[in-house]
Length: 424
Image: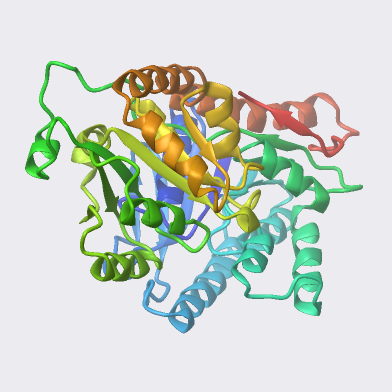
């Protein structure tokens, strides 16, 4: 089969969506399929330009010369999106080799519209891998008024984009339930497959010192709570910062690694509260990622309740894969809270529940509690977040749609009632 995969970013760029797409693409190639990816030449931050064409691990990669303003401003981001849309549309319309399946992600937003148009042009199937649900993300961000004319128009656009899709892949059951609202009365199948950990789940050897923990000045008595990843608008930090300002346990240290729009707020808080044991770290290269995650004792995660069901951060997978328990603050109607509760691999605290947060911190400072919950997290990762298993399930569903089309000539591929299919 010929697969055409669409996303704005792709390795060697570090954007997570591109990294996950590459995992799927090379798995498809190993199964004997022909795989082509169309993406942008410019990196996520706009600082780098990649070759226009290359083959990576049997995957054909075509990069379009879109603009690359990166994250420097809203207008620059819109320019990047617009130029990529235009170049991608032209490329898809003049694509010479007919694909069997066009799979689109959600960067930039509504790229699936081009996938659907191109699928009609080439007479093939289209599928969608929803990393962020639009326009729900925009509504949570306050970019449009819920129930307003713009929101209604964008919701209708999403319904049209997904209508007739052979498969709609989501990242978890809560997101799948939310997407079903867009598929009422449509012949599309909504499935959910969790994102995976990048390495086989395993903890840090107890007898082996962690070089990053030593380099960062963390002692054996310190209990390090680490937030690692994007400090974005959908995450909560007030509770963690308040806990750092008036610590529930004197051994607790708070480390924030990564970047994002809210990092400046956290830095400003740290300057205003110099007695809070807060430390800032830069992002680490992939070669040091495992040591970085293992250096901390407890990982932090959060999500504002307004963003539930619109996205599923992959932070939990990385934390569980190294056997670290997760302390989560936010709404409970989301995958992160669900999987922590189901696994026993951490603590779930409601928004603004400082007393509950302090109790959880006290428990997290108990080495026996950390060890037990960390082991539960590791076992859950081995059962649910393996890359090979997730990619096999994903590919099997894509191939299955093709088999349905071949075996039943009078039935169009994807003619399945909208249903959420758990694939854990």
